[in-house]
Image (cartoon, helix red, strand yellow):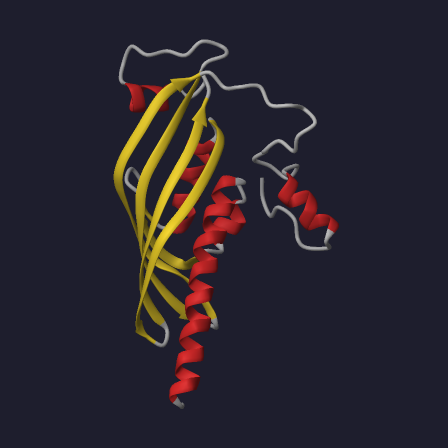
Length: 196
């Protein structure tokens, strides 16, 4: 393989890895569990703080945890992709996750604010989670996916908030198949939400 061919292959690999990380974040935010599964190889291992194990268990854990998350948005930042070989890479991705929780998120309220804090019917908690994904990516059967992930937590900032009312004429974020993304994908003839 020529030097140019190697450089092009590496650029293609880097773009596939970046896309996989973005699609993972999108899948979690939209509760697209099959999309989340697609970010990992079937035998992958994830150390996600309170959960450590395989992909099926991770998805069950995230489903349970996100059942009381009203809003979730991953902001991906700096990313360093270190190619270890033609089919392996070590990737560090900075991430800030903003999530909003309502009164039914009793466990999360206690986790972020401590015992004794309760939310009233209109109260919410906003949490910013500062973290890094340390991913071992592998290319298998032509697909770059996560083989091993360690979520490194840097800091969590959480506080009670009064959520401003949004205009009903705006496209409002949803965490299901009625989100504008999925509706636009459907109108463009693309696959919609894979699981809800």
